[in-house]
Each structure stands twice: as structure tokens, then as C-alpha cells.
Length: 62
Image (cartoon, rainbow, N blue to C red; front, side):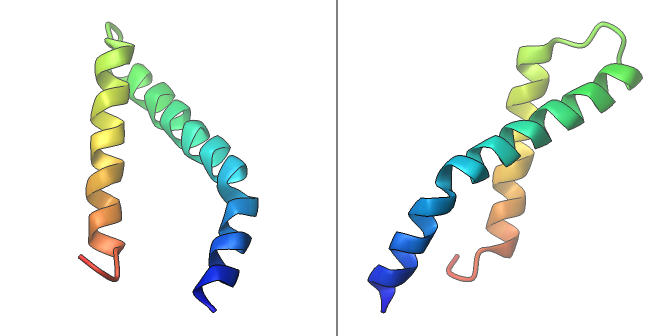
């Protein structure tokens, strides 16, 4: 059964990647509104780190 889930997930990998990139851009824009001299690379690293932390919180197998 696990193989079926893997096959299904492989269908969504590209879409998931696009969604994650969109989230980073979205929150980077929001941060830019609040921080006029925003270092975009640093902001993106911070956003990705925050996303990793959030994934850890929702991971069913920590």
C-alpha cells in the first residue's frame, strides 16, 4: 500500500514545489512592506527556516 502513496505523491511533487516557492515569495513581499531595506536572500532563508519549523510541528513522526 505504501508504494501507492509514493506513486500518488510523485504526481504532486512539482505542484508542491511551486506552492512552496509561492509561499516564500508571498511572505517575502509582506516582509518587504514592513522592512524597506529588506535583504531578500536573508529574508528567504529565514522564511524557509520558519517553514521547516512549522513542518516539524505538524510532522506525525517527529
